[in-house]
Length: 313
Image 1 (cartoon, rainbow, N blue to C red):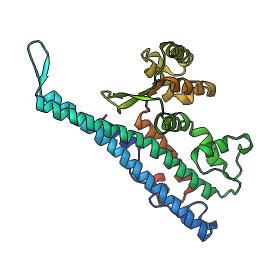
Image 2: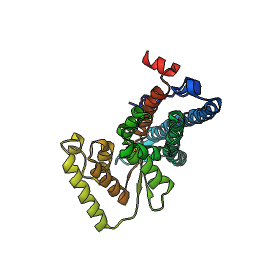
Image 3: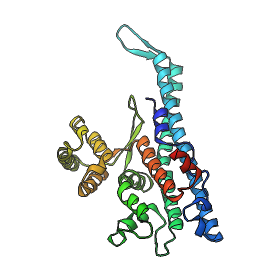
Image 4: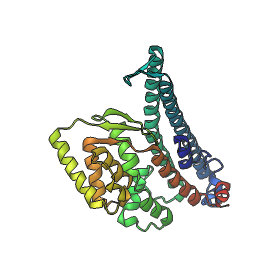
């Protein structure tokens, strides 16, 4: 399946916040005009950010499509001699090289934008939830703070809105290893990770590799611990039986199934990964996590909106 088709499956290009306002929220009837105005401002910010992420995902499709076209150009203009060695016209080679460089730069930029703006979307939704729950004892306005707030023993259960709190506790485990950690450690606050190129698999999205300099001795210690995790979870995660004995591949499979790891092992995986580096997460996976949370969120806070009614139909 082409990347364009898969991303369409993982992300809804029709903005689910499009027809929402304070009046259609579950708190609508009890809001003052001032509260409603502030909520409408936040909804508009969320709506805009969702559209920006849709554009980022569309651009990722274009970037990959450009790269594929360049490969096709090279294949069609390669001449093979009797010895099987391929040669390509110099002018075509220069043109293809320029396009490969440009499309790779564009893909890396749009890829990083997905993490940065995905995090902003979640923070805006946390602010909106803060406004809609209307618990004046609340002290969070970011998604990270919101998760910590609900995970606190004294807020479990959370009387003001336990349905939402429970969902955040139980269904957003992906946020820490997939979005916050990569966005913070590998991109925004990155001081030591260097780019090791981008993997372009035959199918699936290109995956940038980030790695830090590490001694052979330290790498061996990390890899030994990683192999122990692989052995421990081989029965629980069947794909581990078929993965190559390769640091990046083992991290990739464990990370994709991190919700199946015991909490302490999940933390160790992140520590080991951060010591060396990793393939950056699949953008389709990131889009899927965001979409699933958005769908729950809109259904929970705006149960009477037309968007939710149409989805039920």
